[in-house]
Image 1 (cartoon, helix red, strand yellow):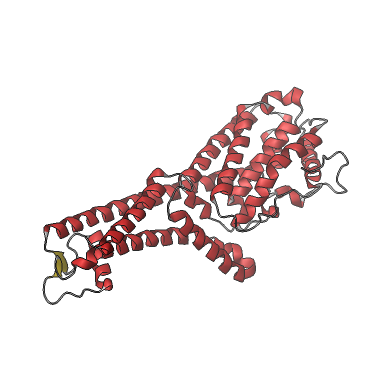
Image 2: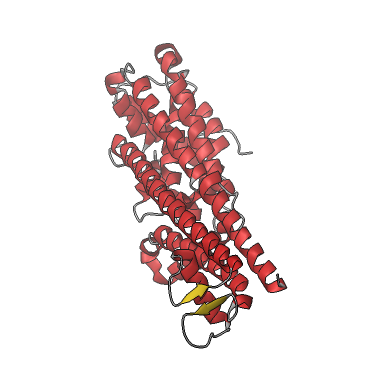
Length: 370
């Protein structure tokens, strides 16, 4: 076995391990090559998208499908090159065409390798020794197995993407298409009645848990960026975190204590945080890292606007809600603010209440930032 063949076999093993870790092991960030390849393609697409100005978001919406295609091409080329390096020294001896001379260049080896990975005995070249026949058999099994695994993986990715979009659209509809958590809470508690709120939030918590695990299993999902901000992972997480923060800080404890301390509220908060942390840890944050802190006074104005919405809906609020809201929001907002730009969204895109803030200066009792 020549050094070229050893290198080719090692290359095939590396790519097979990458397919195994990406498709079968299915945990974010565990691939050997795929995460770096995907990030490189994403960085290139971000650079190209900047040239399109206002259509930047539309250009980035093609990133997910394009990265999927290029990842499959990357795996196919890697396996083909590895197989070609193994086959190359055997051309003209163990592997020959039916008639005529046998070219021994690398391009011919690539052609033979591609055929052996797809169909046994395909093309005019065929094996003439036991070792070559076993090599063809191994290549055909590898090719068929990888193809089946990749196709199954793509079906799961798009199924998970549909579930994520369904959750995002459901949340947007519950905010009356405003992206404002206060509007969502007002509709969950019409006239101040919280009887059905915990049940509705429990349904959302289950869908959120499924979406979070899907992104851990299929990190390719993070690259599916839609032009409409309502489908953004950062927006749906922001709305849910803002919602649970309002429930925990603004609602009157005596009247709504059961809802405030419910498992549904805790699950929504923790699930949204886990989803953002998974994205923050696994996704290439090439922009917005510096934008890591809240704008001074904006949390207080946001709370006053939310409190006004809740009051108009007949919902009793807590007297000390402002300070509690600001303190809790400052625990998670820096994470949300630095995650949003990774997919090309602004803070205005994910925070629906920024467009309807309470007028006037920030309240004096807003605690200082960390």
